Image 1 (cartoon, rainbow, N blue to C red):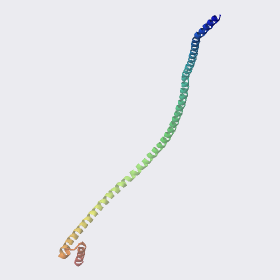
Image 2 (spheres, rainbow, N blue to C red; image 1 turned 135 degrees about the vertical axis):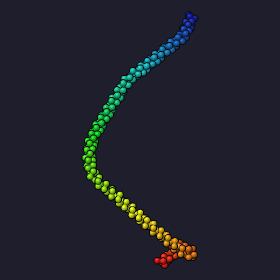
Image 3 (spheres, rainbow, N blue to C red; image 1 turned 120 degrees about the vertical axis):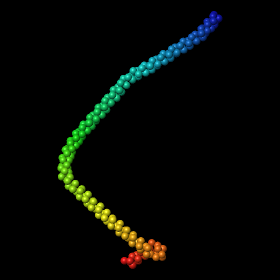
Image 4 (cartoon, rainbow, N blue to C red; image 1 turned 60 degrees about the horizontal axis):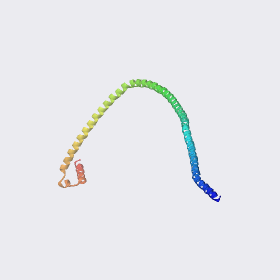
Amino acid sequence: MMGLGRENSSHSTQLSESQAPLELSQALKDLLLTFDEKCRSECDETVHQVNSRFDNVPIHLLAYMQKAYTFREKLVISKLNDYKRKHEELSAASSAAYRKMKQSVDKYRNLQTTYQDELDRNYEEMVREFVQFETDMEDAATRIANDRNTVIAKMEREIHRFRELEARLGPEEKGQNQDELLMSFKALLRKVG
């Protein structure tokens, strides 16, 4: 009996030892399966989130483009209104300038007519004054020429007289300096005069 019990106990020990690797292998498989499922689940969730974000990108982009278009449209309308206002201001200023210019042209034409009449009246008088001016200039030129000839003749006489006086100087007086020579000439002039 005892021998049987020993055999049974050793048989059960051998059986449990052989079952241990199987259980460990099964536990490892279960753990790997759980890990795999968890990884798959997290991956699926990540893919879903990424897809969701990419799906929302066109919506956000469309909203952004609509805002940008609205802003651009408002800006364009504002610029067009500014251009329209400036155009109206320029048109008004141009009309006012045209009216003022027309008044100035009419005034200029009236003044031109008046000036032409005045010029026609004064033309003969101006011609007479010009002829008189030419006559006066000719008379003045004649007087100047006569005066010039008179002065030249007088200078020639003075030069001739100076040469005569120079010939009367003695050898000592000819060696004098300019001031002394001038004094000698003056003395001679007093004697001659």
